[in-house]
Image 1 (cartoon, rainbow, N blue to C red):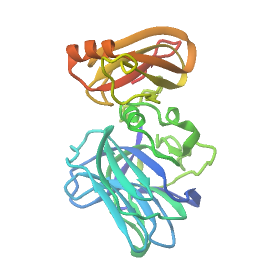
Image 2 (image 1 turned 90 degrees about the vertical axis):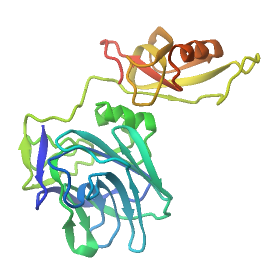
Image 3 (image 1 turned 60 degrees about the vertical axis):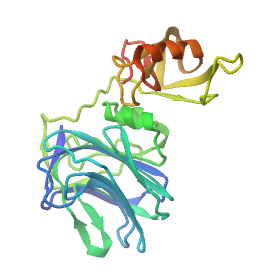
Image 4 (image 1 turned 90 degrees about the horizontal axis):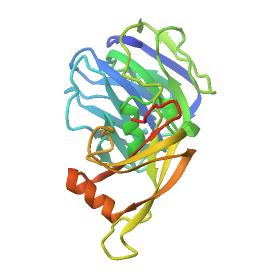
Length: 318
């Protein structure tokens, strides 16, 4: 289920108290463009009603996703290398700090813009267009289906963005920093905000599609790997192992560490480093040894360590 925007004048919007007063923040959305753009598409936008302060993700006139942030005097833009295909769901995210903006497409980090700027007082949320105060309203309308538009008042990690692109429900990813979450299911108008802020989006023209869903798996846990105690290891005693911390959004009873090609890799890819059944927990420190890494490298040749966890119901993280 999603909201269909016609690319002419359709949008969903809320104008209220600031949702994210200033960076850092992350915005993410699922988008299925109807066609390759003839012009620019504004897919999901945070903006300020009375001045040019905004941050948004959209598509260029050649179909490449981009993240842009602006103040009255500066603009920073980070543009992905490749265009999206038409009529296919894609996960687009922008991470915005005061000195950097980065585009992420389907869980893969793209270019970073390092313009130093910090928009303030972002009090308008729009899907399907960019609210541009200098232009006097909404511009660059997006033709396509839009769902699961979400805002966090923090920079998500690469693994968290990969989890979202793999179908994790946004409310299972760094929930403590979730400040805006609109599923855009088309069942209600206005479209409800699933956070306590309750900033509902007024629907203007965007119709409901009750059959075409973004690929969300609401049962899958999310898992992150942090706190690595050593960046290099060797055969030398004392330097031949490191600790990492596995954290999950819900209790897990089994984990698996795999050596994979990228944060977006699945549990069927790469080679296993170790696995174990554990007492139910949401956080666990484990030790990875040089022997385990060498064995995994010989089997696969991949260079990223990724954790997967299984909850008590048997659901593995993405």
